[in-house]
Image 1 (cartoon, rainbow, N blue to C red):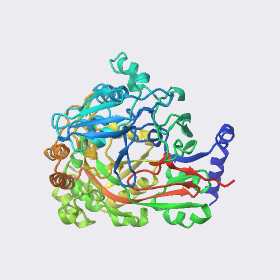
Image 2: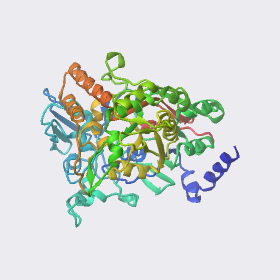
Image 3: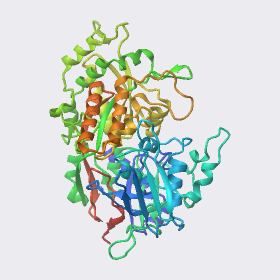
Image 4: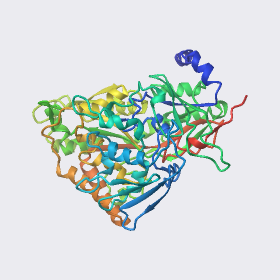
Length: 580
């Protein structure tokens, strides 16, 4: 334990005087994130950073316990009989963090000029491309406090999607959209970077930015213009400040929490037994949110394209990865039961589908979902069927005698994924495959996976999406922003020679059909087909669906933690009752 004590001392010793003198005098809650945000611009962010969820809001909110949609900036809405039009009625007293009114002009600007702007590629465009033609809905101003969304055809999740998109202020950002650089690109692409002075960041959430120290902490202050009030008319949120400590890893988060430096943490199941013993002494409660809408998975880079004349993936490895029997063999060779017991302390279940078990659209194995049990003999048989062979030392080779060896990426900030990588490396050695595990800093990892696209295999962690299956469209659409196993590019030099197999196109088409179908039974049948294809062809090898836990100090009141959402989904009603 001496090493742990030393680390705690370092953390306590690096708190600056201004943080103690300014923040400790004001009621504040301290939470954590593994990394600093890459940008303050929610449209350009590739990472759903907690800070962005606290300073921006959409038209309506989602109850974190039930998943039901509730009024927000829009106090009510009306849906047409044909399900293709929605009229949102905005609250008359909603303001931005600088005190300026938030009106229908801001809503129309946010959607038409930013999110639907083809010169501003962003993940929301995946969500709103409707039907095979991929048309965006029309967004029109009816009055200063009314906007209408018009879909070109029936679109089942229109209300949920239109309501959740973070709104942006027209008066602050219009010039950045209309002004272009020497390449003809909107200046908005670089607007509101992390060097933006806090007073220039105009937001509409319960908090606004007060101070940012890269790789150390973010301090948010209560937005005095936030619209919410409790039943007695008191303004919400109640907590004056939120401090987000940048901890770098889940291990560091645990150390800071145990030393009293954090009020709450997401608790990986690997730490559950240790922390359960400390609940009373540490004055905290471990909340069990049930199965998380999250899964850990392994994926190979199936992209056969070139960029600037150079293949993204070594052609030899690309042939392996694009051999179906190879991927199926890998799935059979991974011991998920051992993974659950050793890494997740038994607090999780095997996962085999792109749709979470909490969703009514989930297809179970009993209903026909293909699964891959741990079976080394079957794995070796599949490899031989795929044209591979074993040499005299038991090393797997392809038909040309190339030893099968590849690099497996993961991010160094999350020790769960690192441990998963270590086990996969060990498991695949049992079938003669050599794996080189490489840990990258999170933002470097994201850049490699989603921008440069030069990687072999990776361990990912998809989080969120809830019970609505169409939330997976970013992953399954051919040009989706998270179509990582065969990713297209949105910036820089285009790809050449990108190959789209029939099964991949079919899954994409099924997700489009599912979004168009308003009959629930028919929707279930469509998403069942998509799940079967995904498991037959295995672009993702799903591993574990963990239980969700959060450790939260007992002086944080009104906690309603749920695996369907995140621990601060109801931050507006949280209270602090510190002992003096």
